[in-house]
Image (cartoon, rainbow, N blue to C red; front, top):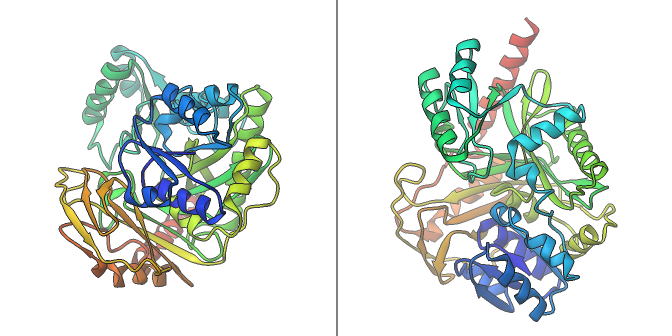
Length: 434
């Protein structure tokens, strides 16, 4: 049983079916691609954990995998395991790595895990004003809980100065009674996803997500406009030693969770910033990334179902293999997405036998040939190439298959944008040395 109906879950569903398993899907809207792959589809509230547990028991489900992060913030996994159903996703308590940013920061601090940031939990207006009176510079203002990748705002990028930062922090305080203020980082972000059974950690290729709505990495944050991965499973602007350090951080987190009797099993992904001082932890997440999941699953080489059962059974070994290919994902979204989305319909002319690029269906309804968009991301075109720019160009050459009013970031994966990121790292390193 797969919970979730977005582009990430479409990629997961395809790997489950490719492995020869029978798929039962649970989602809040009828994703046409997941529906096509499923032996049974249940359209229901993904947060209604009691009904999902009853359905899993009735359907004699062998294993459940949870896609979306809000579902992990319910007792679903605990209830399923208490009824004897295997789950390859973390419990509600373990998922606090993502659902509580403060929990994650404290875990890193209390276990002396590298990569942590300077941070302060603010729980009153007086404390908020005092913080900004006592501290100069720029900071990130974060809600503690889940925000779909859109809740974090950074001074100098989304907030013009202290006054805007204080105003936004007050909004969070009214809503959540506390807000997290963190130091601002400078560098290049990257994502490292990994399978874990609570002891062993098997890494996937590095990827980079492009959250900003508009070309040139400007505009408001979104759930992710697209992403890239490279043939060597690194990135052109990320050193191998930084990947290794990031992996050690994830391993240390998994070890600390196990030692505290809060074992984490499932997919963990760290969002890191490459800095002159090495990788720093921006966030830790308790599930596959979206869209970076599509990069890695598209080149996954093996039996995905075997990996999920090994996670649930606690006997994960070296089963995660990936082809040495580059990938690029570009999301097709409604015009105005990120500011004032204008949903419409899309006509799709896609050959079902086309293997490169692949088309993943996200927040849409309808058929495989014609979909209605929501205010969120609609379709993800994912291409494989010998280089990132080659994969990007394959996506561009296939955009004609999607007809309608939509927006896509054409610059993702281009040679120019990658070169700018390489130069950014060089400048930061030079400034650090001087």
